Length: 269
Ligand SMILES: [Zn+2]
Image (cartoon, rainbow, N blue to C red):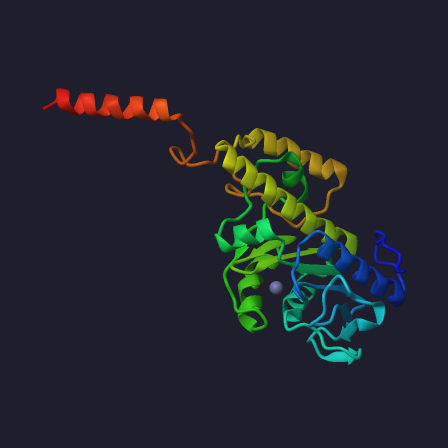
């Protein structure tokens, strides 16, 4: 039986990294973040080698010797299996972000639904998300397993630790595997809360000053994230365009509004 733990940090033996990728795979599978053989997980072993989950295997059923070692161009250096065609997306992140040592890619359903709807998770709805991720943009659609996908990600990888992939899924990264996994879990949880509040018909966003205070706390807590803050990331109650905020009315209120409009219209004839 494999130990079901991932420890923080990157100072580990190659065997430990292999076991931890298996653990991350089981966690991602158990939480329903992938179906069938979807998803892939990798860690940076050193300046020129990546250890990655293989293609065509359930991420819940991997064993340490299933892992593949490649160089930063994706050429296989060791392993009896083959790397995923989606590895290019991981390699792009490792090449552009020296601070990143682990990447997770999965298709968690509610976050992926946002990706399919072209909706970024960019509202200042939850203080924890402002602290940890800032916001989660949507990368344009690119055919999986082709350079299109990496090209679509390229403009975003410098500034975000979690990205929705249009009509596809989610990619997260971190200084270590535990962080990259937690970010995947956080994105799906945020997507669920965001959807539920949308269904409730009301979202009360944090204000600009609220977000400022959280950003000051981010520095105080030493939270490391690449996420920048700009006028629309995250979207606060101050930055919602006037008239674009969603409101809900009862049937009675709606009927009264229509009646009133019809009455005024008749009075002017
Ligand atoms: Zn995928």
